[in-house]
Length: 174
Image (cartoon, rainbow, N blue to C red; front, side, top):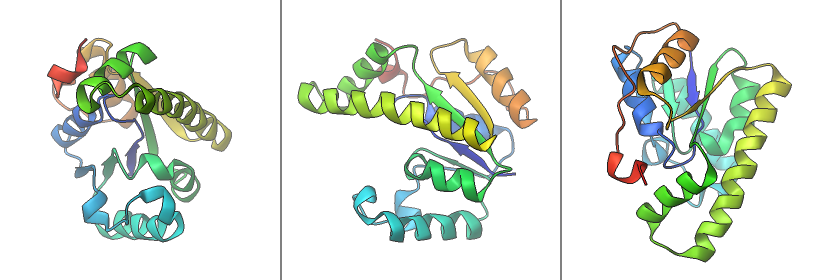
């Protein structure tokens, strides 16, 4: 079973990664260096997709979260139609933006652009998963931690033992 966590930064991808590890899955988080992609990822899309695909197929990992996973959600959905796809989000865009401001600083022009990207990309992920009939779960990291753990565990058929830990908590709460 392959699991792809498609959330943007500051949406709980680290927390979901940790849960997947506790569930016994061999998981990797933010594997840009390990996969050998060339940054910026979007400017070298074709060669980077080949590197990511090779890494996924040869690494021995079951679950992949954060970048570069998010960048290649369309290709992943087409190539791995039996995989599980999890989109992590925040309760609203203001909460996500506030968390990003802690991470990046209050560069409003950058945050405005990132906000538009965040909203549009999440909608594209939802539509792509629906159009392809993929196994898809969306969770809001701001919801109850035990409830989120039950959702993920039930969706994947695993038990990560307890709640979904809130990692990076200083930047998660407003």
